[in-house]
Length: 270
Image (cartoon, rainbow, N blue to C red; front, side, top):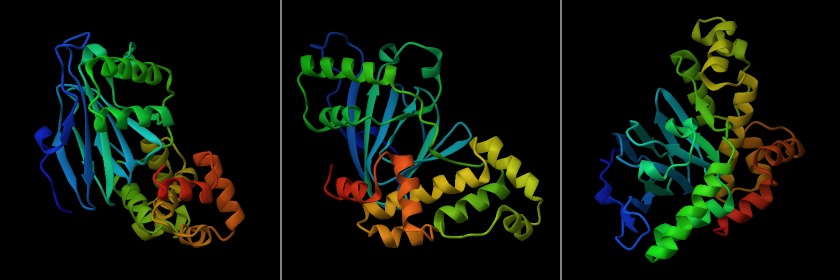
């Protein structure tokens, strides 16, 4: 995997703190194109960061956890928290940085979390990164974005990777080969460990059973393939579904839309 040293000056930073703003607090946005294999090595910011993959996917490592995130998630990373970002496919990372004085109220904002990426929130982040808004407009966008964040529920369906090295090996293999049909017992035999040990590791480290986690991983892989333009029938088989109708139903539960509509929206640049 290639590495890219993370320097704020390397990104297309726009909308820096403006004296005409209603406060002197820092508030700015960036838009960064990333290639497959890009790595933003462990780093931290003085500001809170709200990160969103407008396209592609990101593996975010923070406080001993690793999350696989796509465009349906926002990642909240408080100031001073060490984190690493890795990208296994081309995409665009949109980030908004803000002084800690501007964060929503509540203890939950002092720790990393994932939130549902509402369409309006994504549009506001893109506007900040692309439009170079005036100070009054930037203030209005900031206030609306803060309101959206305050009301946004935590998103617990990000694909978390287990910390246990044996469970991590299973998870990594399934992300690379989502059509692998091996049972947890079969995985346990191949690793020389009990199935109960693996099962406990998945629940403890990801909050999901192995079966639940595998469904999530398969649908995560499906979203990536659909975004690449693959046909629904091909994607269903490639991620381990023998029945296309079962795949469509599971995908709709996960993403709130059918695979065909998701594919159209993403490939059309929605």
